[in-house]
Length: 184
Image (cartoon, rainbow, N blue to C red):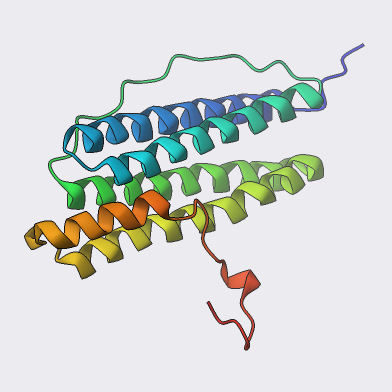
């Protein structure tokens, strides 16, 4: 008896997303190593923590496939892209990566709607919410660097940014949590 509750296309889409999350972890790890080598220990720490979060996302997908009776396969991941040229390049690439990941997650949500796979649709809502957070976090990196002076930032402002990101929380407030009393 077949106990796999996932269609073949859905299982393959989830495996593909597992691989994207593993690749994301490698990108953040790679950018963290670059930042560390450039003397940005706080930014590196932030990126290392984010690499672990991406591995956790991969594990959630793996566990879901298993719990639905499927068989997750571990695929090869591409090498991370070349090191960024500077912090502006790094933060812009992080944002672009998150937008690409959001698009991939939406494709799985759309497939779950087409298949009327409500369990997967429900499961993927966590990732939809997470991507709102991920994109906002990436935009905040870009904004913080702009406030510090962007490519023309002084050593002092880069030092302050590095320290701020070292201690920054790994999550951000979301619009769903806003109230008139606490708008942000």
